[in-house]
Amino acid sequence: MPPNGRNGLPVYQRIQNTIRDRIEGGELKPGDAVASERELARLHRVSLMTARHALAGLEREGIVERRRGAGTFVAPPRIHFNKLMSYTEQMASRGLTACSKVISTRTVDHEEEMAARLNLPAGSKMIKIERVRHTSDEPFALETCYLPADNFDGLLRAPLGRSSLFAALEREYNVQLTYADEEVDATAADGRVAQLLHMPRGFPVLRIRQVIYASNAKPVIYVVGFYRAERHSLFIRRFR
Amino acid sequence: MPPNGRNGLPVYQRIQNTIRDRIEGGELKPGDAVASERELARLHRVSLMTARHALAGLEREGIVERRRGAGTFVAPPRIHFNKLMSYTEQMASRGLTACSKVISTRTVDHEEEMAARLNLPAGSKMIKIERVRHTSDEPFALETCYLPADNFDGLLRAPLGRSSLFAALEREYNVQLTYADEEVDATAADGRVAQLLHMPRGFPVLRIRQVIYASNAKPVIYVVGFYRAERHSLFIRRFR
DNA sequence: AAGTGGTCTAGACCACGGC
DNA sequence: CCGTGGTCTAGACCACTTC
Image (spheres, rainbow over the protein chains, first blue to last red):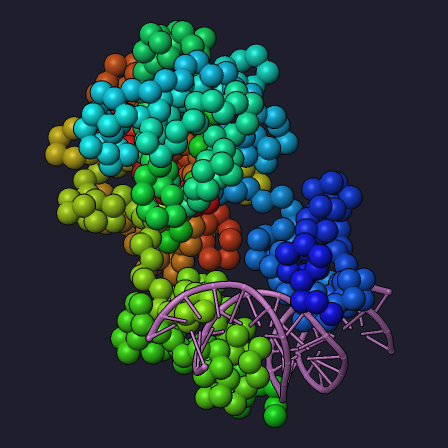
């Protein structure tokens, strides 16, 4: 038998995908039993070790729980702690649709603080995108992000209103985002923020400044976000 | 061959232990090559899949990095972000001395929200400790923490003004704190907070609600903290 | 070309869970 | 008891990195 299927995917990953699809499609719900190792091996005409490898991978991802002597079961939906996720992905993980309005997109070259955050020389050209995030009608966040203009030529022509910036970077520019450092504090809404978020000036807002790094440890995006306090909170898990 | 060695440990775990020991003992340093799968299989007189299983486990733990075609190498020491640290420990890690004033210590039994956060039945007795944290003269945080009264009899007699609550729990009560879930948002200072933190009422403050869990995954402490925004910010690292 | 990790086979026995 | 996951064997070929 050929080691890989028709497409280039290893067999164990194709098995994983069939299971993932059935969970995401709602066919399998948390607590439901997944096909056993032996069953998968029979169904996919594959060795036991390969079926096992597939399930072990899904368990490591937290999608599935394995109990010796009992079976393999769909894991309860876990809260994603300390995961770097785009707004689009966050919404999707809560079963909601992302909704945002692009306020402005342009290139700038004299915002020194932002250049410094991206580790660029002073005066560097940067792409600047301002977006208001909302759910249904109510706006709840203003996010301004900066990217080095040199590396992302043509990004401004992408349909940012619709699709995710993360997705565009990872797909179109082949950039692998790996981690982000965030600084969180509270501040009072200034005139512009108050107006865009439909709240009185001086109201408390959560401010999150985020530097997102690519796999080569180079900073790729700097984001400043202001969040309406009563509509947004941040969840973190810390370990001892 | 017997599936397990003399002791009850699976072979692959014993292989892992020999490698862990050599790393912890300083014999292998970050970047050094670890024995290859085939080498381990030969040395331990074990099948390739078993040697492989051992290395895969170490990789999942982050102890080792595997590069196809190159080999398996000791991973660089991971920096610990998002660490659960007491106020005392945080200050110490910045070379400062912790300074706090106990405002009140008492037992309460009708704060239902707090009982719920600690997963206690309604009406349960809890120890409640209020402390103001400060640097030099300026107060910058009000922290109120709750603990189940049953488990921590006599805690109120400990010298909390001086030593760490964490230290007391870990030493006196043999509780191993393992992780905490935090919820962060922004809010306006109410009268009491404003007075204690020497700031105008209505000013934005960072609010952090924290549930700290022991090693048995039982909640042990619930802390609500209000932090002066201009003197405190939170740093988080998120991973993709 | 030699060595490495990645995938895969076709079996085996064990420890454990639920019926 | 039967089915489950956990461990393990003794091989195989492939893709990749290093030299």
